[in-house]
Image 1 (cartoon, rainbow, N blue to C red):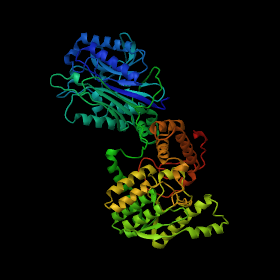
Image 2: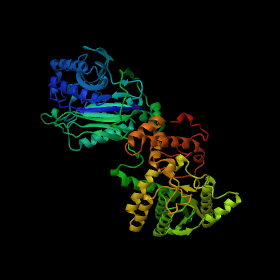
Image 3: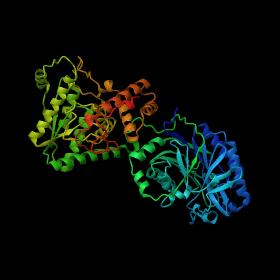
Image 4: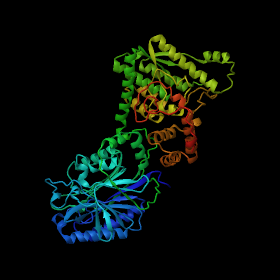
Length: 639
């Protein structure tokens, strides 16, 4: 499988012995082979793991320095047949000064050496006693025994010529006010490798974890950190062997600390996605323009096996749904944003009522709950909500009863307008045969409902609250100037998959058992516009997902297509991984075709949608986030 921008990154915490270079080298070789066999494209080892980081004044011993150079040559030779890149550090004498350098090794060659820039000099660390910082270097290359002339400096970037460009900072470089990784990221590094050796302290691991995650977010990069393990422990210092891989603010992989054997963690990171985020979602390029960046030297990597089976990729099938541990807090935040936005619009327009059509489906139920929250924010009675049920030819008893129950349980003002008779008059005016179940049959009902809501808003001095969601907007699954239109669309940046999550939260926290049970039944009801007559037994005949494909798939495609610009082939492959065992490859393929076709065909509806609150990072509002030509051709995106 092609990587589609994915690379497998590995961090190793090896079992080392202080100053036992022969033992340490064999451990590193064994771990490197294991990681390469597991498909790693790059493997990071802790700081000074060839010698041990706790050698103290032994670093001054030429015998140890020469042994470390021989060990580097041995490691390179033993791993020469592997495509993977290794990053490991050693003490290196350069012009009578000793430096702590990270060596980038691939295919039997040392491609470059990156010295540590920030040397701590405090109670527990006194590295300036042994090493010089990168700023003291007066040369840009060194002659390395067995490897010839090798570039050295903190200005090196390593690249495979595709998506994999990385830089290296060493240990405490990350803890500085302006880490070298910030500069390296602005100059193109999508991955930062950091070999560290920090003694364990209470609370230190969590601090490091947060720091790595935050720096990866700040740099819009992947960040790989590997610290020295328990084998380094000596005298008063204890080492825990922390290893982390972070991806743009998210900790993608981490190890169990204080392990007594060699440990390797992996993560498949989409570096193509990080590049897309830098170009479209952040101030990355503005920072590049403003920063006074020194020149960098770029070092070409050897051939990398581009295959990646995505076994270690973070690919949630429902990317819009918050992680379980933060779900309640995030749901409350989203609902609060929606309610605050609606309350502001009510104040500004002096709306006396909120007019909303209630179908008994997911979207209108969420919008109703948001209306109730907005009224509470303003101290307005819930009777200010004019909730209207408008049964038509396809309305089922289940959705009708749920709609009526919710309106009454909330204390909204209830109104019922049966649209069947008025729609029959419309059919007569149009010389249309209602036995024909065409789009005319369906859309007359949708537009009739919208007209009723708009007119009721005029009559009551109110505003029509739209119920359509982000998934429907993406697919154009609405009737133009029917349910497509409102005076304020509270769900416009909430995808269908997230609506179920929000309603589950609302049911659990509404404080009314009957209302909670009704909301749960709404969640369990198949999605349908209910514009075609039900079956003879009264059950729902028209199911949206039977026509369009699963909304979970559409939301997945929407997330990766809009947020990261994923191409059609990549969308299909990612979905096959994320939904393995849930949806067939055939269904994924047909749903993707539907998504892309409708997304391009239906932009004309998005070009004139009403205002609505932006809640997450994806919005299709033509005024804020998504500016697409109405008549753009979608041929290029056919899967």
